[in-house]
Image 1 (cartoon, rainbow, N blue to C red):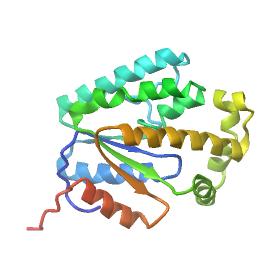
Image 2 (cartoon, rainbow, N blue to C red; image 1 turned 135 degrees about the horizontal axis):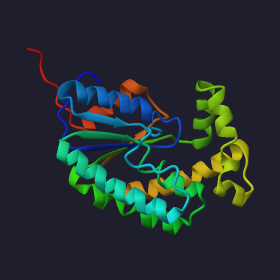
Image 3 (tube, rainbow, N blue to C red; image 1 turned 180 degrees about the horizontal axis):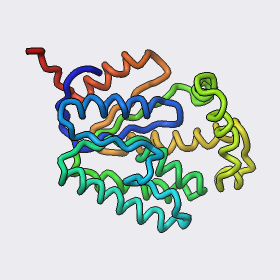
Image 4 (cartoon, helix red, strand yellow; image 1 turned 120 degrees about the vertical axis):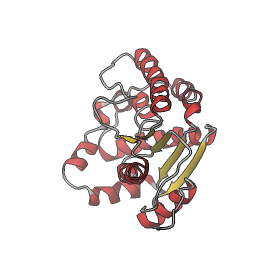
Amino acid sequence: MDATAVIETNLILIDGIAGTGKTILARRLHRLVDNEHGNAIVYHEFDTPHPIHEWDVDDAQTWQRKTITNWSALTRTLLRTQSVGIVESSLFQGTVGELLERDNNEDVILEYALQIPSLIQATSPILIYLVPDNIRSHIERTYGQRPGRWQTKIDHFIQQTAFGLARGLAGLEGYLTFLGTLKRLSDHLFEAYEMKKLRVNVSHGNWDDHDSLITDFLEIVRKEPH
C-alpha cells in the first residue's frame, strides 16, 4: 500500500477473529492515510485508554450503556477534528465478543450491536471484515505463527469466561466453540449492517493480494509522480 490516499470517510472499522491480520491492516492503512493527510488515528484493540472499550466495567447493562455513549462520542470527535479513525476489533470482537464472553443472551447481543450503525452513520463508516474459510485450520496455523505465550493464552482463555464456565468448555476445543459462535453472530451483523463494507477471505492469497483488493475497495486515489 504505497499509493497516496483520498478516502471519503472518517471511520474505518477492521474486524475479524484472532489472527486474521487486523493489526497489520490497521498499521498499513494508518501509514497510508497519515502520510498523505496527517489526520489518521489508529486505535488498536488493547489500547489504554480506548475510545470504545470498557474492560473494567463488570455490569453488562452499564457496559452496554457506556460503550454506546463512546461510539457517539468518537463520531463527534472524528467529525470535529476531520480525522480518519482506524478502529481495530471494536465492532465485533471487542463488543460482541465481550458480551459473549460474559454469556449474555444472543438476542441481547444482537439488539445491542444493531444500534451501532446509526450512531456512526455521520462518519460514512467503512467496514473491512477479515474472515478465514475454516476456523480450526486458521487457529492451528496461527499457533505455528505465534508460538509460546499466545498459544498458552488461547489455551487457557475460555475456562476463564462465563461463556466457557456455563458450558464446561476448556482448552482449544472450548475456544473453537466460542469462536464459532462469535463468527456466526459477526457474519449475521455484517450482512445486516448498511454501510460500505468488504469481506476479505484471509485463507487465500497473501497480503499483497489483500492490499490490492482493499485499496481498490477504498477507492484510494493513486497520484502520478510529478
